[in-house]
Amino acid sequence: MKASPLQKGDKVGVIAPASPPNIENFKKALPFLKELGLEPVIGKHLYKKNGYLAGKDEERLADLHDMFRDPEIKGIICACGGVGTGRIVSDLDFGLIGRNPKIFWGYSDITFLHTAIFQQTGLVTFHGPMLSSDIGLDSVPEWTKKSFDQLFGTEDVIYPESLSTIETLVEGKADGAVVGGNLTLLVNSLGTTHEIDTKGKLFFIEEIDEEPYKVDRMLNQLKMAGKLSDASGIIIGDFKNCDPVKRDRSLSLDEVINHHIIPAGKPTLKGFMIGHSSPSFAIPFGAHGFMDTQDLSFRIESGLRKGS
Image 1 (tube, rainbow, N blue to C red):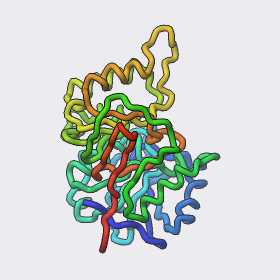
Image 2: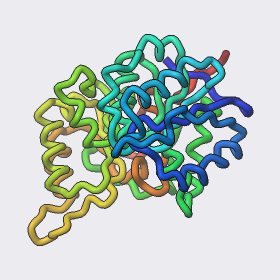
Image 3: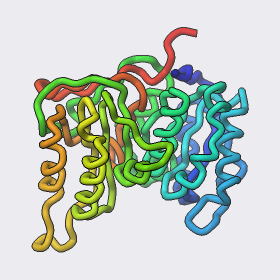
Image 4: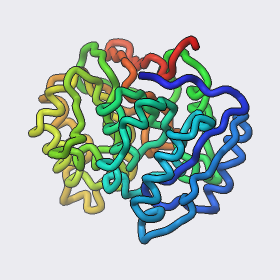
């Protein structure tokens, strides 16, 4: 199930379903939506704070439901990630979301919502840069801004060769629905009713601020849960600031990744600027993707519905 592309003049809801945004960065980012020709509608509780959460669980949940319920809202963009979506995911009204398919955009802690929404409703969502986290920074790469073009068109999403150096870990071709997101959140889903399903899918992972020994733990858990062997192929995004603090007492990040990923034997490409990277390239989750290690290509069908 895919939402319709946005049109100039459309209203888009802006919510914080996890942590509160950096207000200064958030306010700097709002004019960008207007430059795109969109009218931002701020969630009622976005500016609230409850410790490390953007308001109480029921308030953040209400903002999300209100945006899906309002027929004038054509898309929903998250201000930031942080922590907290796991606290509200089991209370999501998936019937409401399924009856009102619209663009849902974010990453990081939003991973839990991407996984649950796609697996419960079939709605394609977007793993993309956010307002406070990315657009409101002092320097914003053009490719980060350009990712928002996906909101308006139905062309295939093709990762640009010029954006980063892509490497092959395991040779081959693979295709399937693209799923995944932040490594920590994917591991958090295991054993829950919203456990990530990778069977026959292109499995994407990315991370930030985790040392190799923690990445090792998480990849090992995914491996033991069958998530690597179930996938048709693996796409490795940016692992920002995941180098060891004490290098002489640590395996390298590459050693950890290679140890778990290569034996899975699935076609694997790494080096994508997708996730907590700068620039941050957006991809649709749930749409059908294709990867080929021979030409280092990664292509995904549009996350939006063609035609009326």
